[in-house]
Length: 361
Ligand SMILES: [Zn+2]
Image 1 (cartoon, protein in one colour):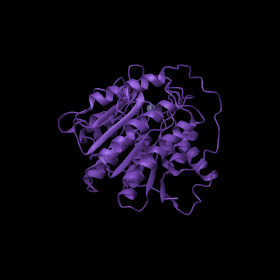
Image 2: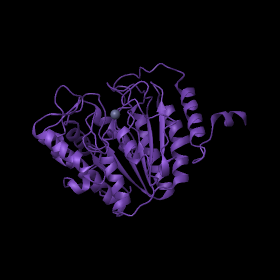
Image 3: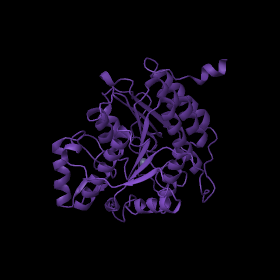
Image 4: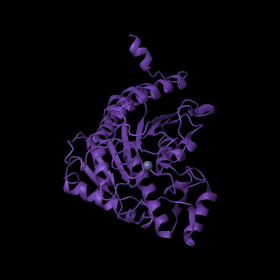
């Protein structure tokens, strides 16, 4: 197995928004426990590292100083950052550890100490330069990507976001930046928060062509995700030739998720991890994996672990807990149509083969 580092701090369990909210901090220790019980942490090629909290200069890679101050001020008075995101000093302390973990995972990969590093707790992709929402206070994914270009001298960073929700914060931050290609696969934003992330949003100015949104129909299943990985992600990697792939997104594409309505199984999550590893090997780059999401109380860690198993090419040690209820049989042809639309929207930048053309042959 390639060298792999897990970056984890027990303090991230404090990234917990309380009983009224779906993002609770207990998932993180549960995930680590699963890594322990499956023997991952005992493997000779695996190291467990403890991050430092990100400081203001780290956060300033992406966020404005006014925003960082505003977060501190709201946390002190235990107020609301947005309607759905209450802040406390302990939440802010924990998010600095999460960003610190993403930075450390990135550094491990950039300095080629490991082939892949995982920052546990990350993927806070709804935070933008000067805003935070949906339980995302600071955007660890964006800070990690910026550190790659500003501190590690990279000029081609690929972010693959496979969370069920589009990463509006990450998209905003890199919308005009050609050094960071943001490829996000998510549930159709006509049907779910954040209501943005459409095929025709492809970036602006120098960044035009470097934002790729793949909205999947509700109930899209493993086959649909497989199609996107094979027909969009892999060709983009071959053409862009990233120096690092940063993947983020947790377990919420799974059909048991209570917030999203995609239809992936654990095996589908596994195949995301596998495609990322294979693509990285093909172009000889490392992988940073930032994972957090998933709203299936008590089971989120299994989805996170399925992603990891794919990345490490290990068999899944568990089965589904219940049958997949997804019923819509047109999801596959709808996904083909989305890819045809992408091919058209991005034709000045990337070659994505159309299904129409394949069918004509
Ligand atoms: Zn999500």
